[in-house]
Image (cartoon, rainbow, N blue to C red; front, side):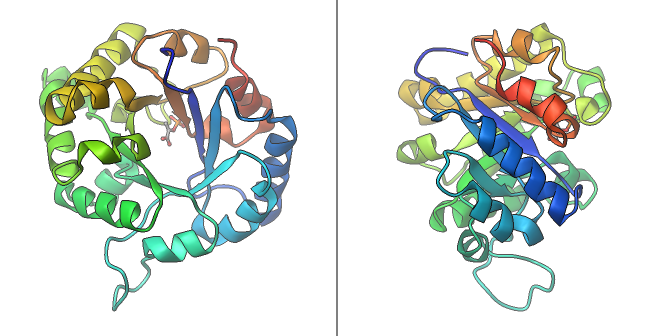
Length: 254
Ligand code: PEP
């Protein structure tokens, strides 16, 4: 965490909760949120609940996002949702390239640039997820994988758009496994991403971009992660589903 970059705490609910539990959870979070001046908080809800969740969040600084979008504006794409559709039901942001989309649903690298463009054009704030698998880490390929994912996703992004973009570094082997990257591993990967952005889009962009860590973040490890210079926030899966675990993460001491 570094002055000038507002901490960003995001919950990814994935395909969890039902409507009534989602609404209870968002009400609780809203009730505990301050004025949003010192931290940005958002949840990425299942798309079918976006309208209801964003209606509850309205009037608060809480962000509400979708977990995915398709890059075309309309057409014969059964089951897919456009940026404009998500925006219309109250989303103000969207996850792009979550590892579950990349690995379970085989979304190719080259879709990410198109999804980023579609999100920005629909006035959604994208969170681009990148991260290596366990085999890639063991094979010493982490930097190479991050470089490839950043290069393909950000090829059309210009420096002026960087303040609307967030990157989430999520090592695939740490997602939902209870295994967290060490502060050294997270620090190195975040620094690599920031350097890459600075080289590609300029020093100012490198300083401004927020990079979240994701992968088994819990109340007891958030503080150590947030103490790292290049970690500007966290993307939280499992622990974002219950107030008991999500509120202490949101309210971590700086
Ligand atoms: C995620 O879904 O992006 C994630 C990091 O999940 P978890 O916190 O459960 O590892």
